[in-house]
Length: 540
Image (cartoon, rainbow, N blue to C red):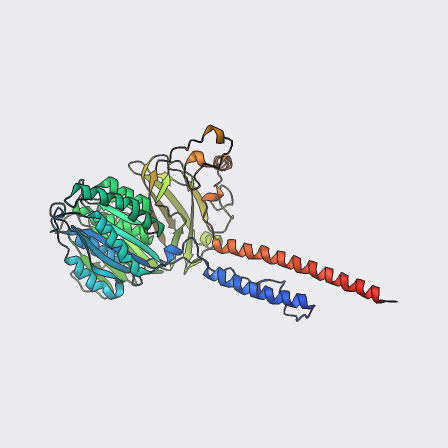
């Protein structure tokens, strides 16, 4: 996927970084030489585990296997008479990277797979051709078969990497037989959705009309860790798919100030998507030198995709400076970039419980290396974070790097804050980094859900505060008192922080190495004492 990867680099350890390692040869007792050999083997195992151990962001870093499942029932003739879902589908596929894989599933009475899972670099023309053949001529809407086919299409992706399903429909489960509809709905919720959840395959479900079964689609998306969207009309569909792309790829973007945005030298490629308010309107792009570009011109390094509802412009190696989108001021726009200077955030939840305290860490990376606080200060970098609940004003989120209020380490370049949504609904978290010569922005949407009702324990077991409490239940009253005290003091609960498994594994091996060394020393001391006693006993 077109996003800068963020691997957690191996910890540096060894002879060059530890004064305790000496190049001087030493030959001691056999037990020490054996201990040294075992320590060397343990260090080798430790280095391998530090390199290969999965990190919390491993899924974000890998390639994506995506299945686009599109409803082709006859009702789509009314909800999408101009087949705008074709253009929107092409937009989503075109944003994927060459290492990603995509498949197309269509469903009505039955599901079919016109384009099986394949690398986008090899199947781009086939996929685009099959998307152009999407029709609205099916008699019924079999949601179960559509999701089944999408799930099975991902089987070709194997067990590794990220997987996702985008599921678009305007209807309900309708096979023409109400009894069969009930059976298939139960199988969908009771069998298929749990399997998707176990395999970590999120479903991004789109209700394409008020007639769609929004409750069922919302339930599928929430249970699988995906997201539920509604598109009131066909012209809104490309905007919904852009939001899904942001959720899956977490791409860097440039904040637009009105019509203008700043491009810095680290940007290797930028993709601009502008929503058109009229099919006859022309979108222009003005470069820093003042030259106006349109799709009628053929300019090397610039590619245009003009659709009825939007235009997409991709610019390779764009000139540094201020660019301007020559179009209506109020038109929605997105500017995604491929860059060596990336803004990163630890917040990636698609759903949180109302009133739950969620930590947010943000930092900058250049060529996958975190920038330290000294460089950020030199560049005059300012981090901003805003929480925008649906239908309400934006709320600023304080970020700090002083080692207080939940921040792990003072002056490490990682700024920390927290959010505690107080109302159920959809929220948007926007993080920005503003420097002297660059700007970056990340946008992440998430659902705020009502917490699960408190679990009532029987009177006989009231003394046992943990026996009957579900381990993964998320609710404010489920937190231990210490977490509430930490929240009152501005501290973040440790359980809410991301875990770095490489550090955890390193600590585990270090502790065991120390214990092994202590045991070997004890054996050595006892052996020397025993030999001394034997020598003393052998003397006349």
